Amino acid sequence: MPLNLPILLTWLRVALIPVFVGVFSLPHAEYPVAWQNMVGASLFLLAAITDWFDGFLARRWNQTSQFGAFLDPVADKLMVAAALILLVELDRTASWLAVIIIGREITISALREWMAQLGKAKSVAVSFIGKLKTTAQMVAIFLLVWSEPIIPGVSTQLVGTVAMYLAAILTIWSMFYYLRVAAEQFKDGAV
Image (cartoon, rainbow, N blue to C red; front, side, top):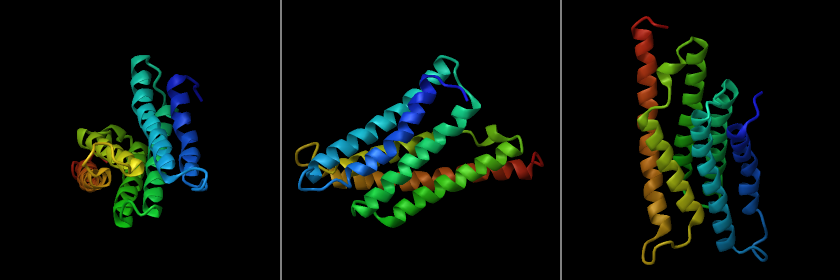
């Protein structure tokens, strides 16, 4: 297993998950909800930044590896799933939205694994629509975790909810995109 800064940043993202969830388990008498929201959102933002930064550094320094390619999406999906489950528990998002997003992540991860076993991993590589979906998810989750007003007169909760609906739409769209790309491999007899 290679050990370099991009891999360490990915491991940091994994390590932040129990800390992120744990912040919301602290007693409200000592740690008010507003404090939990701020710290939780900051931890989630740190994780999101490391997600971008580890990939950037790995490509820039030519430190990409098969292990990094495996661990990076696993860390992302674990963080998003943990955040969505937490948001449902805090009653800040609908459970059906969380199910759509988590279900898509599992489906596409399984599809990528299957296509990789068939030697066709590049056919279901991350697309622009997938990157848009990820951005919408990160913004929505950050805003819903923060929950407190950021801009006076603008409901952070409402903006976060709209972003979550957009993320769900992009999630479904990107899932069908990847499934269609994989289906074309079968139709063309490539698989």
